[in-house]
Image 1 (cartoon, rainbow, N blue to C red):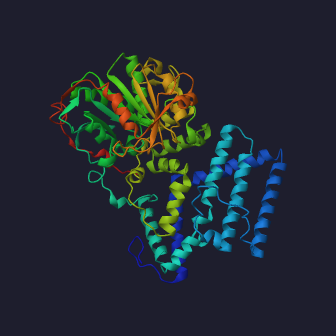
Image 2: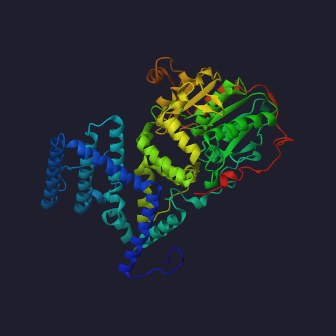
Image 3: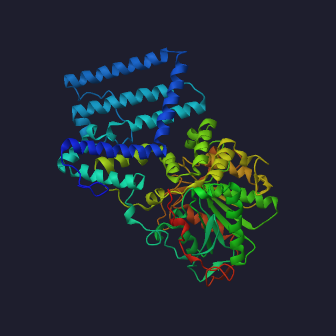
Length: 582
């Protein structure tokens, strides 16, 4: 066996263990660099505050500890008496896949380890839930407590995981060797592998829709796609993806590409591919993303297509940027945007869902200081923050499978995209954090000045289509629903099944899941859902009917990319999307 430098690794058992420990510590350092230190610091701080407050009523702690000690005594008594077949003292909650293997229950020692952990984690969780803090402090305490107890699960350590030990014996140690190889590979990459990354290549089997870059500046490239129909609608479609991720989530593979779907329906499609900024681009601001980004892209599409109006589709942060741009255009009485589709987009940030555990003045100021010092928010750190919201599924399950069991995760295009993040410039990101998440200024008339214009979203009369998803923990649908009262156009709201990404990438050809439409407006989101009509299949077809009514007449499809003033720079997917700077 060789290490990552090609040196022969020792075969002496003790030296091998020391070698594994050294390499494992590197992964812990990698995790700390992308948010792991924050977990421990916030957990310690939250529990210190809780302990201080609990001195006012020590009875709560005393009762919790007494119950815990009694449960541990019962567990120990069962183990010593051999009565492990009795009703367990502690059981994992429904849906917890960490302890599903039979070894966790059949082997008395591992059954004891499992139940002891569940008792301890349950005690910590219960004490956090009963802390009686303010809502914000309470959510923060419960979140970081959950992160801590999840990290300490015995399933995450080889010596206390019977599945790992059994597999190691059956493979004569080969699984541990393979796990170490996976570990070294991930150290080299700087992140935990969620998919077989060698299975994908941009332009080969991802982002393969034919097109060309016809414009670029320091912030974005504009891709013009080749029509797939002899005629296209006269009003072009401009897609604005999130700037915190790469655009090809909308153009994964032919059977689940939203871009390709639009082309198949006869649309003339353009797309913004954001730059992956380096430290040298630290001063790119929110104004720059709106002015030199969204507004410039709108102008370019108008010039290339020869049309006075365009339709827009924007997703997540791309939607928030587009809402800002619509506010600028409204002030300037510019009607260039004939319709706008917002996909899982927050405009009102009063309730940002699970992300609110990161949103308080202290945490944001600490993050802003760090980002300003480093010049960018590194994409890996942002990805870790999102993954922590579902840490057992998106972090620890891969640690166990990849490093302890030596398994290689199967190819999955969405997870490949998820592992290919984008940096954000310090100026833009700190403005976004404070102006939107902390102060919620976008919803306040005149609360923000963007590109020299005071933003008042009530002036925006553009017809809008809002697609939200029922299980979205990043842009909660009840929060996105509020945008309908903020923008004054003829708006339509559609609620899809599933979450932030899977609910959007729901191909019409597969026609899976379901969505809700036509709820009664004016009485809040809950009443809307109660009165809405459930539709089977993909929302893509419903949206296509909506956008078609706003797309104008059919005309001969463009014969070439761009025009005399916007010549081909390079083939799609372009060079900006290939940049991996983290």
